[in-house]
Image (cartoon, rainbow, N blue to C red; front, side, top):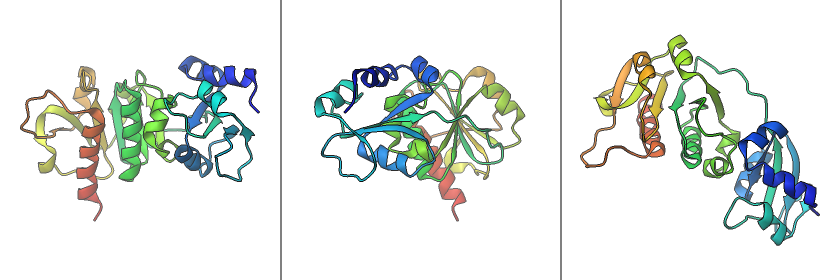
Length: 238
């Protein structure tokens, strides 16, 4: 059974500061745990209720205690403590989604899931972006966090040094449907509220936009990323 010290530890990991200090993050839910078990991530402990149907070694946890540590409104059978892996080097020679200032953990999780769906194996975020090990990010990724490399770096330096074409998502630019996307390349998108930072604009080699006829100012960042990835995939999958 889970003890009070373990409950306190798991709850503390809801904060980024504590995740960094402990070198641990939390994974919840059957789908995410299933993907976790197939990955190279190192699991410290798994806690599960009696109705979790698995032969994987784990500690028992009551429904009540699961509710005490879960970040979900409806806790889902199983929760795991996982070690944060050391960040590897960014691969500068492959197609990457680059995100400037994503603040919403659900959006980042959706972007990671979208990248995985379209076979893009690397997502690069600005240093001021939300933590990839935020519980909401992990849930929204639906296990893709364990299959997709996600990095944080100074985008101004990274983009300046990149040798790949950089397609920037702007309100004004060539339609993505009239743009030829090279592979490999960089798909650069900014936050919904501020867009791509002004100091990153000079690095863009292809200014592009998603054409539309509505009256709203912008699309959801996760949706915009999916549209860019879809067009990129369409052009480069043959």
